[in-house]
Structures are given as structure tokens and as C-alpha cells.
Length: 266
Image (cartoon, rainbow, N blue to C red; front, side, top):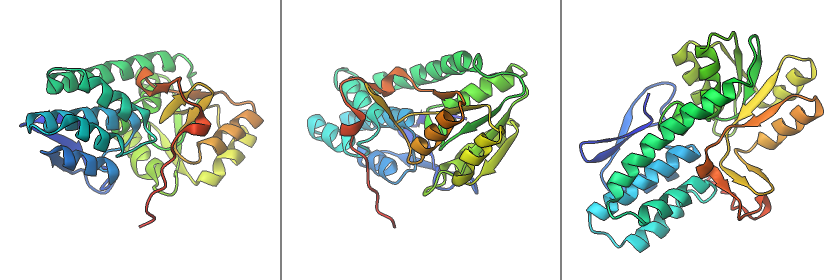
């Protein structure tokens, strides 16, 4: 399942705002349409946003736009996700931005497969694992980071149970992560956000694996609610892992200096 693809000189995106009810696609033929798709969460997840931005920059280059101006606009689409800044800076150094974006898409898939392989070593047969938000194939080009770990463990024949919390207010756990696991045939249950601490307290969760929007030098920035899950895991001595590519690392910044988006409630 490819979250995004270059097809017929357009960027093809799964419209994640329509999931899980229907699988539909959005086609972007201009960089402005890519920015709009990022802002409206048609595409979301730090790695997917980064690669989408790279293709958006390529569309701008093909159209002969002022690339310095476009770069600023693109970076402002989702300021929390460092992959977006990284991707824009990377393609700006390339003579052919489309070729660079295509290469980045391939690298993302290979990176996620590696994360899945290494992460699966941490998952034991019989584990019940909790995740927050969606760090799956839908958050990347394909396969996923946190959910990629579960995919790899399941494909190795391990008997695992995945628990997804709702992840309010947008409900990415309920609408996206549960859907992904169901597509793979991986056993999955949905819980309210407020239930995770209780389930940890009674020994119903063995490990927690989540993704990241940014890995700073002094901590992790991720979807609202991640801190609550981390505190509960620490309180009940449950292993807590972050699955993320190097493009999510930002060693120059503190978590306290990271721009946290405040979205329109409508």
C-alpha cells in the first residue's frame, strides 16, 4: 500500500481524511495543491509529509516557480514535522528535484523495512503491544515505522496483539492504525486514550512502540497524548520505544523550542 506515488506527472496521495470509510486518492499537479494536502491532513505523518514536500518542490521546479519563495511556503505547511524541513533543504541542493524526490521515496521504504526488522527483535512471541496515533504505512511512503515493527514481527510468525488508542482529537489511531492492522490481518483492538494507563497497571500491555515528529537532543516530540502514554509506561516499568528514521532527528533543537502547531478547531 503506497501512501504516495508519482503518477502521470502528478503526486498521487491516499486521502487519509476519508479513511477508514473509503479509500480514495487526491492528485496534486501544483506545489500549492501539495501544501494544501499537507495542511488539511490529506497526507500526514512526518516521513510522508517530507517526501510529499519533495515532490511538491519538484512540481514547482517544473513550473518554473521562484524556488526560494516556494521553499519558505512549503516549510510553513507543517512546522512541527522536521522531515519537512529536511526534505525541502535536500531537494533544494539537487539539480533535478524530481529525480531526488523519487530517490527519497525509495529510501523511505528501505529505511522502514530496516526499522521493522530491527524493531521486531524487541517484540516477543505472545506480546501485547500498544501504539499511539499512526506511525504506519500511511505515515510514510509505505510499510511504516512503529506499525512496521508490528508488521515484521507478525510476518516472522510471532503471535502478537496490537492495541491502538483513539488518539483524540483527530482520531488517527481509531481511523488509520486500526484500519492498517486489519488490512494485514494482524489482531488489533481499539481503546479510549484514557484506558492505556489502566491496562498497563493490570499487566495487559507488554511493550509500547510509537513514532515521532521530531527527535531533539533532549527528547521526543510526537502527537498530543504521547507524553501521557510515556509517563504511564515509566510508572509501570513497561518498555517504551520510538521507531523513527534519521530524517526525523534534529539534534540542534530542544523539545522546548519546537514549534507546536495549534490547528483551527473547525
